[in-house]
Length: 133
Image (tube, rainbow, N blue to C red; front, side, top):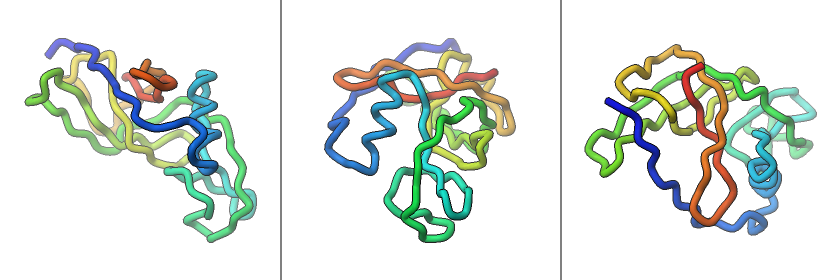
C-alpha cells in the first residue's frame, strides 16, 4: 500500500503542563527529549513527575538518539488515510507509542530498525514519529 501523509491535529497547549513542557519545547526545536532519572539512571516514557522504576523525583530531560526498533504495531487500513501506530523501543531503552511514517505500510515489521522524523501538526509543534531506517 502506497504511503499517504495524514493530517495530525494538535489539541493541547505546549506550556499547560510543567511535566510535558520540555518535551513540547524539544519537539518545536526538532529534538526528541525523554525523561531520565538521576537516581537510578533509567529513562522512561511517558513524561511524569516521578520515576516509575524507583519513585525518585530527581528527573532530568535527555536528548534521545532518534534510533529505535519496532516492538509492536498495527496498521489502520479502514481509516480515511491509512496509518501505522506502533510501540518503538528507543536505543535509550524505553518504549514509546508513536506512528510509523514515510513508508509502504505493508512492509512494516516487528524488529525493524527505525529512525526519528518530526511530522508537522495542525496548530502545534511537529511530533516525533519514526520511519524505517
